Length: 88
Length: 150
Image 1 (cartoon, each protein chain N blue to C red):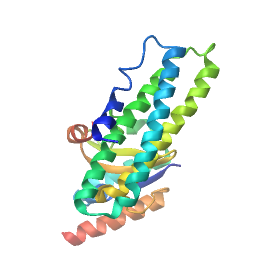
Image 2: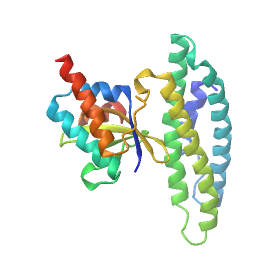
Image 3: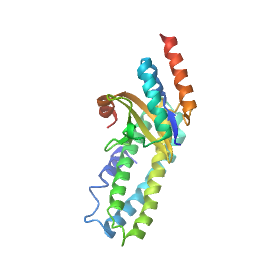
Image 4: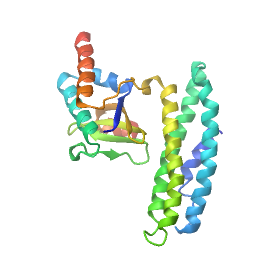
């Protein structure tokens, strides 16, 4: 099981979400912690960047960064295009 | 090392000699070792100044961010070069080169840790979500905070 650590930025982004969206993020993080390559997460490395994304819903993505051999930092969460523009 | 020199690592891939094979891999290895030394020196020089003034912290953060992006692209290049070796005849060569790659990945992790000390936004919250219980508890706490904020 990977070590998954939320950053302050991620915590702030989650704090701003509504309860339904927040619960979907919780489910995605739980799935990721159980299986990094869970097929529903669509784990994807952003080309030319150190960041990766996982799917929360059709429109939302969590941005992560590998911070150790088996450790990930949750960097941010938000709308797909915004996350790709900001971190891709 | 200046930002200009750091950005030179971005051209790691383009400057490697063609075609792939022993010569290309040897060049990659030599460059990686040079880069590895430069990065170590940089990390040593920045680490003690992590608690200095805001302007210096911003400058250090910019340097580290540039380096993280560059090393990330170097890692991709190394993977392509190592992956380009034929699986049979050059297997031993590939194995030796993977050690070089591992060293770069270790430097990358060191930089990520350093970046976290320099950027308060990226600083981990110190909580580890390593089980569904821990994840649920963290989200419950965040939700309680959000509800309190109204």
